[in-house]
Image (cartoon, rainbow, N blue to C red; front, side, top):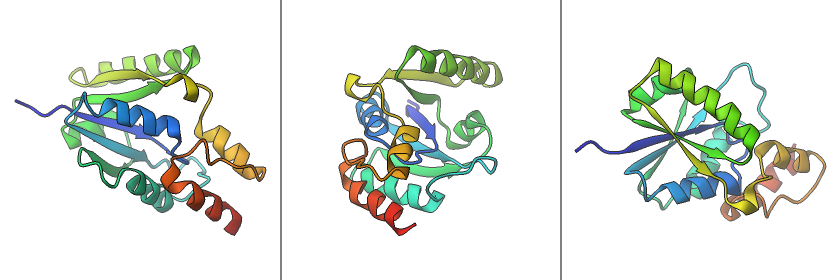
Length: 162
């Protein structure tokens, strides 16, 4: 029987408790989840790719079913390369649903063998996004309750060094 491998793509700039929640809740459904940090040369990131990879590895360091990988290009191409049959996505709002549905339909037309699976965010994370966390950080706020506990201090320290 083939393993059920899912790719959870994102920029994770930075990873939030919402991301962590979706991944943790999806673990029982899949044999492996590849947390895939998408590199986009066109997009200016707040944190470096290396730092974001380090934080993902710290957050999930003791979880055997999770692999952290960076990639570029089409997510469906990356899925085929990783032999993943699923793309995992989180939904916070109806706007997220419409956006993700459009991408999911395009992915399906490019790669019919890959299914997109949606998980609803936990209610306490419905308003949480990486861009909100970056905004709070830019303005000197405390993001500890919005990012994974294991990396909260590092995130604050990295911003105060800039």
